[in-house]
Image (cartoon, rainbow over all chains, first blue to last red; front, side):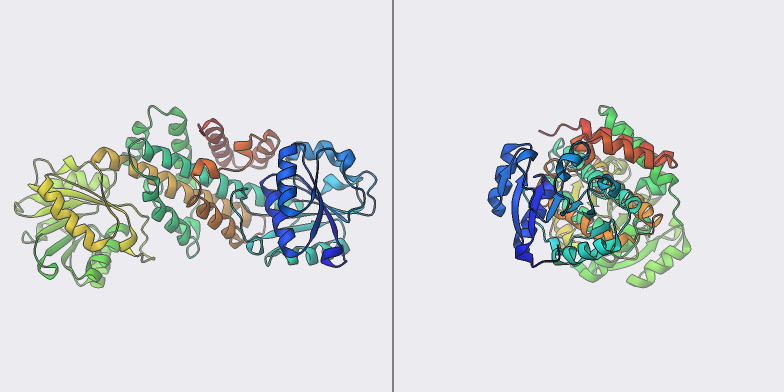
Length: 264
Length: 264
């Protein structure tokens, strides 16, 4: 890990959205990725081609000679594979990139290990500037944390430390602020389309909603019928969703949550 | 209404977030606002001062001589006041700015009327460029629509037509995409603060979530444990919210809604 960028031998385990974006960032930063592992042959092959690595679809064929193994797998797959991933690789450094998985998953399996959690939403179709992504680090020892930090700073300007407990909550907060938010857009879009209105007309509103919280705190920025508790409007909206019981329940639950939020 | 900008006599009824931003935009565009009505003396006085109008706190003292009356009141207040607002003002043009109120509220009370709904989130603390705000118009007659359109184009580059039914759904969609989204930020912020993490670390994620939907449709942009249906992670998150039953219910409801959304 302390070697020259080009001499560090990296294996990427996983070829999903995060792995794809991380792999590209590593390559652009000057790192060499030996192999990309994915159970799915196509995913392994697509990403490998893009970053000049060898695709492997079986852990038995994964090299034991890399210096750094970076795991970006779905949580359940990772738990099953941790012993195979680490076996015969005593000298390597292992990191995973999941917000929701404790660092302890490595305990008993690896000597040098840690976590590098890039808090961002990744899609294969969109490339994003890794330098701007907040990366949260944790490592097994303070020495390993220093090593991981040096590595992380080559990828991002925004490096923080966070223990497993904090990271879990970062991930949970990210689900609210990103995944759940995007679903609100999806609902909005469908409501507009059903009434012959283009989604683009909402973008200025959506953009401003975000610009606002760069200046005001989210509770200060809260507007709308729920925070005013405008029962008239709320009732009308619930009626309008009568033929969509799931969205009606969603509207009720979020309105209740806004109404009972402690704003001070 | 067809007169010169400076000669058009406008009264603003309401001094809330929308009225404040609209009043400022009118003044900047060169219009003259005679009076600002608000039941709340302070609100009337603050906005009047800013835009060089006279504050009135009683409708009895509102001039009958204006050409255009713009109503930005809470829905329930508006319904109660419509007859007083219009009485003795047969020649005037009346518009309201509410997404959720039908244009028919004017019927039987006014001759020339319509709706100008600026779809945006307004706060008194933030000034925003009205030229970029999508404004949705509706009027009682096609002639009045033309008049309203000319007026609206002096304020915004983005003028659309929408009937009352469409506007209701625009407003509902806006509640999801703006108010509900902001609440997701508020929940995220609180979760971070409770674990000693600054909210700023979330801003790159929030910004990217929005940039994405300028290129991908919201369903295409959807990521996270709910859309993957990663039950492991979902279960952990629900456990983490065990001491916050309201947010736990919120998490469940949104996850269910993401999971059952028709993505094709």
